[in-house]
Length: 271
Image (cartoon, rainbow, N blue to C red):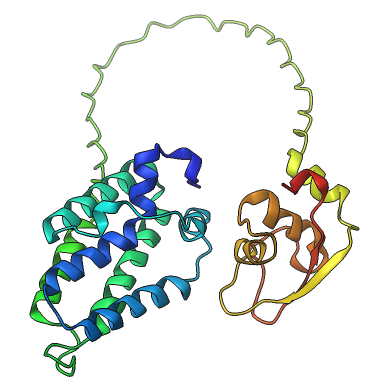
């Protein structure tokens, strides 16, 4: 599972700014449009990001990163935005698993559709859902986000020529030598638990600071971000361990309406 620390600084900047580049592409396609339409598009853009739900750790970190977007996104042409999206796609192909890459692509396309659909064609935005220019920009965005990985075809099995028949001479049976018994393998000791699991277990009786009811497609990352302002593993793992009696071993086993107890952060995680 990819994380922010797996990427070079410039690659992470591109991934984090992906939504901004999509917005820039559509804004450039519109050209000089009425201010009210621009405001509608901007509002739809922000809402699409706020409403997005994910179970991917990579996507959670992208959404959590609220640092400023690169200044190039503010004055980008459609060509500039298209090139940036193609670079993002190359990063996804080379450094991200197929599952997470597919979700990131769906994320950008969902933002593009929300922004383009916020206004209709015409001065008051009362025409078709997408203008012709927006349709062309959407097509370019989709084309730029197509995976470049090629499926590898298995090599055809080589047919071995039939071995020539050999007339065997009659030989006396040879007594089989007794084989030495195979050495008995010693059982492998299980690896020691990770430090975060030890920390979580140590504070599983910590003070409860809140009771949270799961809503919609929330994950433990979302909940950790809400209460601890941090969605990384040590924080959501603490909530998981504290509520293991209802969640079980699988941290994804949460559902709408489930009530979770939020423990106070231990000193090791404060800072």
